Image 1: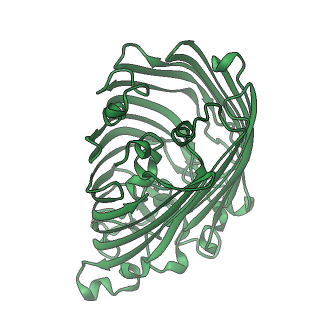
Image 2 (image 1 turned 135 degrees about the vertical axis):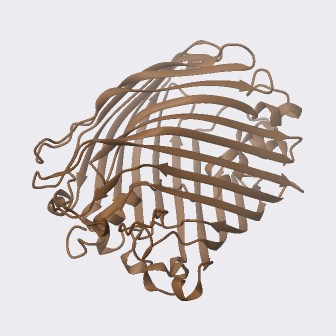
Length: 486
């Protein structure tokens, strides 16, 4: 890869289906099924094409692979709503095609080539990508043709777009405007019918003011962002919600590459169809988070990030006995770089400057469609290595507890006592670049939710197995593909 490219680089009519499906979809993470290279700009983009004062970074990729459990179904054969014998996991061959295009004002490397040292008065970046998936089921043909197991109906397109405009960047006073969109494919756990899917669109827009006096020793951001989550099919309408968020974050560099950091946010989360959401035990909330910490190099190769603070959920008390999250949140990470003084290395060492090993831990809570929220404690190990501008390897593995509170139905009836699941995940991505614009890559990802819990989706004192959702599942994905990028 060219050195320059690397450096820049519900509860209503579908009451029998919706609640149990959403139990699984609460476990889907937006973007988790995106191709690996889309998640990091420094690996996604190449040298680019210059058009006047703009850079264009087009790309397209094709992959063939295997998915053992697209629906996130349980391997149990006990007749649960999401398990065999009627609805077992359905393995499939998957074919993905992913075009992308990013456009930006000239990178610092290109402006430096032209002899321009000052930052521009305006900086802009926007991008769009899409992923089309085609599924070929690998189960017994007569079994797979049943409507609830016909995975061929899952062909669809996910995608994302974003744009950011910075005004007076790197100056004592500046501002930014930004917007984003993401379409996430979220299948129905019980049936393959796309008309009963939980595909969703996430739209966001906002702005911030940036203050950084003293040549950047101190910088502070004050911002606002609006997010709207819309489910495309009527089955998901009870879960449509909006978020208004005010946030701030700051940094004080008391050494050249070490800083005290702070962030905080205050959110207002509201369900658009409040009465339908309430029937499933979901209410609005006004969560608050605040953290303070340290980030920087301890030696030329060793870096540390430590942040600790407090988070509180403040859920509406419409439901009697509504549980709240009120606890410590934070992150700790130790990172070792393969090259000394990362970020200021010689051009010939850029690959090593981006190569590192990190060991970390995070603790936080998230809004959920099951039990209102969940807390998460996760430890992780991450390895990034880029060799000779050709071979890229990223490996990440993690394990942690997902903690659900005691759950109640909207009328106050008891649903389930608090419980914790164990989530295990691992991703290996490798890419070999034959030229500056063409690469062969492979991705292997494994995710498992380890649980002995079954949650009822029917408001009854003695639910049958068919009215229970088994929280355990596991999924293996493997892809081999080619990519052209600029």
